[in-house]
Each structure stands twice: as structure tokens, then as C-alpha cells.
Image (tube, rainbow, N blue to C red; front, side):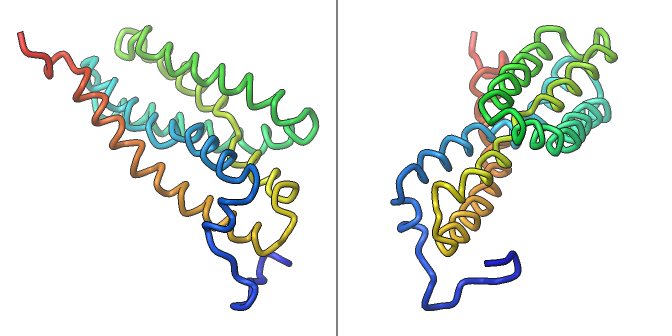
Length: 184
């Protein structure tokens, strides 16, 4: 099956059948949770900057730099995964990404904008390549091309939900943990 081919109506399969295949639900669920910061970080960065007294423009700049660094580094990390394996690339990337995202509020964003820029760019560069890793696993997990096609469609559809769920989760966490939300 090529990229332009689509399964015929008699060869279609359901999302339920694909999710019922061994490892599929666990792999898809795990990578979706792992990719949740992709939808959360940009909004959280803007909220952090504005809460620290910075401008919306600076928050937007940091958020854009995080996304750009992440996007530009994904092909490089994909090649590294091909050479060294997923675990040896994704594990350290996740640790570095988490450390950078945790360091940003610890160091502040308005005291030294240059430090904030470096932290955000490093965090973006270290974003783990989970989507590429999952796509590389589908052929071994789902040898049937029709089921694999359905799994790719399911992954793409659910990935879109990350950009709806992520900002909502940031809003809920911000409201729940904001000093303004606590009564005296």
C-alpha cells in the first residue's frame, strides 16, 4: 500500500478493532500523554511570562521559539533514533525537556530575558520525538496495512485533541493553583 492508496470499502477496519490489537491502545495512549506538553507548553509559557510581569509579546516570542526549536530538531532526533534506538534518544530528550520546562518558572522570565530564551530553546530542542517513534513502531505492531492505515488515522485524529485538551488543562491548573484563586 502506498501513501496515496486508501483501503477499499471491503477492506476497512474499525478503530475499536485496531485498539483491540495487542499493544496498540497502550502505545497510542502513552504517546498521547507524552505529547500533551506540545499543547500545554506554549500557553503555559505565555501565562508564566504575563504573570511574572512580562509582556504578551515576550510571552508569544518565547512560545514561538519553543515550537520552532521543537519542529526544527525533530528530523535530527528521528535520525538519531534510527541509529541508536528510540529509548536511547527519547529517554534523555524527555528528561532534558522536563528539566528545561521546570527551570523556566524557577529562574523567572523577566529578570533575565536572555536566560529565559536559552531555556525555552533548549526545552524545544529536547522535546522527545514521540510521534516519529510511534510511526516507526506501527509496521511491527500492525503488519496488516489496512489496520496500520486506520491506526495512523486514529493517531492523527487524537493528536488534534492534544491542542484542545492541553490549553484547557493549563487553564484548569492555573485556576486551581493561582494565588488569586485562594481565599484568605
